Image 1 (cartoon, helix red, strand yellow):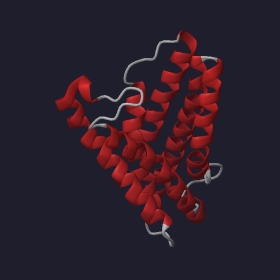
Image 2: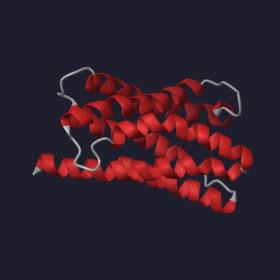
Image 3: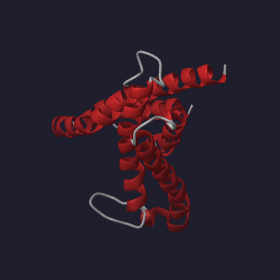
Image 4: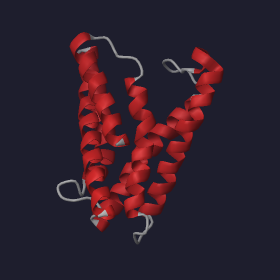
Length: 180
């Protein structure tokens, strides 16, 4: 559920921004906050797998989840003054970095474990790995598109949001199979 809701939030945010130029508040943060918990769900499917990928992915997803949880009181106590803008580094920056990079690194590691164990049904078997691998090139492309038109930065966000929704569907199906 966390992957699908977070992906929907990113997709809506990007679509609205593309259409209107106005970014809906909190939509990006909703996805950002939910994705590590979706990855912990993926980890629960692969955590006995041979190899280090599932263990590394679990640690990374856990670190991202803890970071997201700890960022909430930092934001509440610090207010708007702790929100980084541009190149500014604030007390919140490490939490954002660990949450973001941890989630995408966990996608790669857990994606490897999911492919090995076939924890997700076809056609989703390689989806987490492909998402982790594709995230950086997509964001680079988004930066290049932004040079053409500021709104075009949202195109990769729509694609990543749709992938998170698909991962949520895959996780839901895998959870149903494991409980049946």
